[in-house]
Length: 226
Image (cartoon, rainbow, N blue to C red; front, top):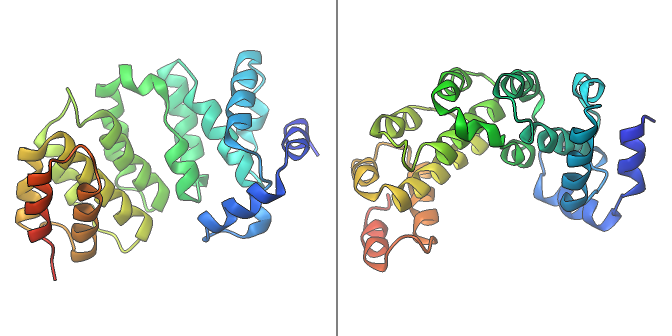
């Protein structure tokens, strides 16, 4: 057992492992060690400071979920955009669950949005479920505020998939877009651009949001597809 795996097992919480395995049913229970997120985040910062991460980054695919989570946390802290993108592209094909996908959120992307867009467009064309989910998540995180453009709504609406975890992210994206860019997003809901399940899920998530007004919620409920 290598040093990182040794640390993870020393911080194992069996109850937490069982809890996690129920939240992520598409992978086997033996995939989880059960290390709590605050411990992983702290350890990621320590490893990033020492700079001794190249060997760990090269060990793909990892054996355990907790290793993938740690990888995502370390990657998210890399400050150099070029290095971060290189490591993100190397890691994404091995992401096999929604939790690791959604935890991967590099801070340096915020300051390099124009460059990031080029990669997002490529990731959206991937045949890997969680690469596509990650791309949509990046559009949601970085391009719904001051860098918003209506064309991004069309970009996400054009993603067609039978994958539950992609469609759930599309719904989450449009619910967030309704909260942040209501007037621009509403026509996509009114015109029923999304498939029935994703459309209704987006409305459900939007009406659960405190950022949507009561009046808007009333109207959105009338747009559900029966």
